[in-house]
Length: 296
Ligand SMILES: O=C1C[C@@H](O)[C@H](O)[C@@H](O)C1=O
Ligand SMILES: [Co+2]
Image (tube, rainbow, N blue to C red; front, side):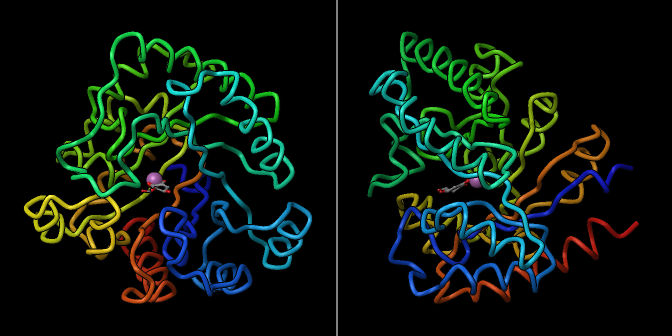
């Protein structure tokens, strides 16, 4: 089956975190890329601290690495599409210059992702007019991304208005499949819906980018019980790399291969690097991929 069409990446988020920039801030780009190389990955995603394209390209080429994509927080509902487009153009130009394949979009209007609110109970909900504005805006951004040779992949995310399977269904139904694609993140959909296979099976035809995020369910239960925020949940150790948590990535991977998925699978596990040594965890993930997922 088409394992040769998969590119494996690991996100900077285990080393430095854009949601809490103080975390791991002493880690340099060389350190991060060195670890990505040592742990045998094909590349990474662009972190907030990454330099201008010329410098980044040189550092990537020296290590034979690639970048897959970068996160974009859109505020289409709050600010309108014109406002959102300005920053989006800049990011797409950057991503084109570093030869990325996708731009990861998350609608952050009313998001509680970066706040102290209980992420398990206080997520926002969009009204009908807001859904329409969001979907139309995403179609516009998706066409823009194509002008830069990029795919717009939408990231469903805890603490946002597009979190649950039902919300992903609505987004997929009301956006143009030619221009708006989906990022499938195992960890976010599991924490939200307690299930990660339904979304994958239902929307496989729209999935063009994948985040493999594992969950320590004992930690997740503690976070739910204590009503923790998203940021406190990850500091508490809710997320980890595949092979260290409770999700079964074998069935996910088999489903992706059976559906002839082509593209990036990026390991993405935000943890406190002071507690979870980033290279050690990158190697745990690599070992799991080699011994459990790609064994045949
Ligand atoms: O893809 C992601 C990017 C992060 O900034 C985000 O908070 C994380 O949870 C995620 O899945
Ligand atoms: Co993700």
